[in-house]
Image (cartoon, rainbow, N blue to C red; front, side, top):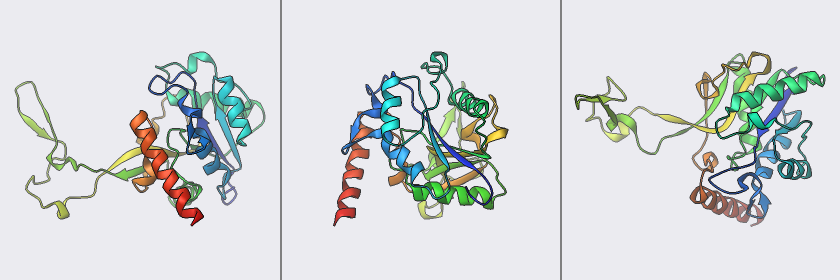
Length: 237
């Protein structure tokens, strides 16, 4: 709990990944990738329960062996390539309520962000409470600043993505810009509906680029694994 608020960490992890076969439980630096996200929840000072939502029995078995709870299986219609994350979240929240498990705060942790830590989760929850429980999303600084980016209309005319910012501004004077990194989303559990857009959460919690790697393809996987191996090496030295 944080204060008097009960907290559940929900990890959606469907089977059938197209980019990397068995991605969520593929071994990464000696552990199933999902284990890093489960540990971030289990090692948090504030998270009461870590729940995995999956349609895949093998993922469920691995998740349980890593210490997470898998109290229900996700229906196949909520685990397709076109399914929305919010559909799985609402289903999980409602299944927990039906089992008399009510939580004040839901922390959404995606298994594809293995570098986010328990310390990140705790700091985000503290900010969530400090901001009067306004919905929160983790962000990271962009590597290519959008001050020089644009859209082009049907007449070939450019339209700046950041209107009002002079394109000749020095790099050191450019306003900080961030992107959603997909690692942490925090919402009041009873306010989540099928119309909720987690990427539009109000408060931005800034995370380092190293902790913000989102594993979508094999290159991302290899990069995350290198960082984890280096992190493990530092912890053992």
